[in-house]
Length: 327
Image (cartoon, rainbow, N blue to C red; front, top):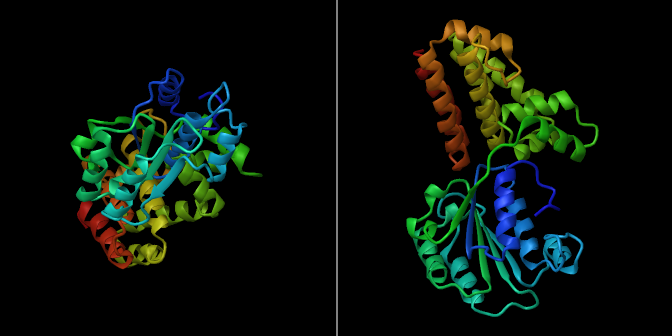
C-alpha cells in the first residue's frame, strides 16, 4: 500500500500491503490502538485496496477507490458504535451477518468496517463469530478497537491483529505541518510529544487552540498539588466539568510531566516542554510516588474515555492525585 497518506507504523503497513498484493488477506482483521492513531483511516485505506482496480493498490484514482473515499461504494459498509461499553448492538451485527451472505455488487470483495468493536457485548460478538467460523470467500471484516482485550478469545483466534502506535515525532511534525496551514512547528512538536506521537489528538488540540490551555492547566495543577493547595487544585479541575476531551488530553500531558520529573537529571530526553516544573517535582515527590502518579493518570484517562460522569471525575481527579502523594 505505497500510495496511502498514512504516517508511521511502517512495519504494519508493509505487512498488510504484502497480504493484499499476495491475495492472502485474512477474512477478519482487528486494528487496535488508542483514539487518534488512525484506526478508521487505515481501515478505509485497506477497504480501498481490497476493491481497487489499479496496479498499485490502493491507487486512489480508479472509480472503486473514489467511491470508497466518498462513502458510496455498494460493497464497502461501515458501522461504528457511538457510545461506551456494550453500545455496539447485536441487531447491527445480525444485519451485517445476513448481508454478508449476499454476493458483491460490483467488486470482488465485500468489506465491513466495524468501528469501536470493543463496545460489542457478548451477544454481538457471538453473532459475529458465526460468520467468522465459516465466512463467504469474498467477505472481509475490519474491526477497530482501543484494545483487543475486550474481544472474545474465539473472535481473536479467527482474526489477524495489528496494533498501531504513536508516530516518530519528526515524521509526525512534518505530516501535521503539511495538513494544517500556518501551524507553528515548535507548538506541533511539543503537543505531539505530550501525546506520545498521537497525530489525531495533536491535530484536534491544535485545531481547537487548546495546546497552551492544556499546558497552563497542567502546570497549575502540579503547582497546586505540591503546594498542598486543595482549593486551587479543585478550582483548576473545574475546567473539566463540560469538556471530557480536555480531561483525556490533560491526563496525557500530566503523565508526561510526571514522567519527565521521574527522569530529570538522568540524561533522558524530556518530552513535556516543562523542564523547570519537572525539576521542581523531582525535588518534592519521591520516585515511587511519581510512578504512582503516572499510573493514576492512566486510570483517570480510562475513566473519562468510558463516559464517566464529569462532575464525579473532577472530584476523583483531585482526590486521586492528592492521595497518591500523601496529601
